[in-house]
View 1 (tube, one colour):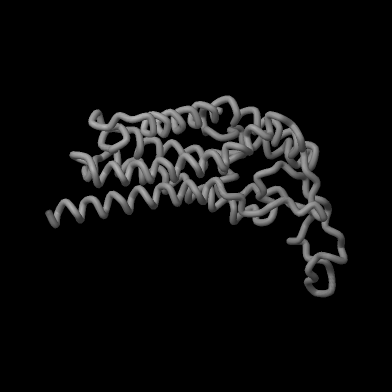
View 2 (cartoon, one colour; view 1 turned 90 degrees about the vertical axis):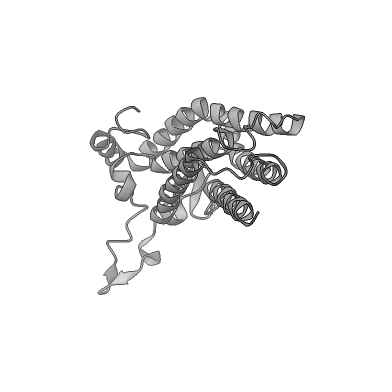
Length: 239
């Protein structure tokens, strides 16, 4: 009995960690400061659909966690921690780490809404030896860290985290995927995860295309040179 309780407790913790990671991944680190940035493609229906995946992702993540935990504690074999469980959590953690790294690198420039950032005036720059600091350039293009490997690592991180959660919640070993569990609520949660995962396939390339058009407008030749240097948008070797 004690072993079963420990196993249930550990699996509950893994489920909560996974959902917390997804919550962080789809929570905007900053909103657009319209005194320093101008929204791009504001009002575009495709953009609205893409932005809606963030709150939807939170709802799906916590609904899946709640149902999974309930089923774990009330159904046979619910406490099983399989290789799929470990893989799902590990993939989610890796994706979240990449996403949060991108948050840190871009700082205030990382907003979920597309926006071009206005030029920094000399009077607003920090000074070094009596002159405006060269490190405070006008909205510099970030090309270091994961951005040296792919142009949109934040999307890679977010998708990796989400599909890792799908492994945890939908692969063999999860209570949600158990043949012992059948109800309308469980079917809705499963369906919502699958539908959200499938919706990212067309939405992501469309969003990337818009974002790259915005970055070209903002950075010009600097962006074009970066695209030539870093060939892959989000999947090295594929896309």
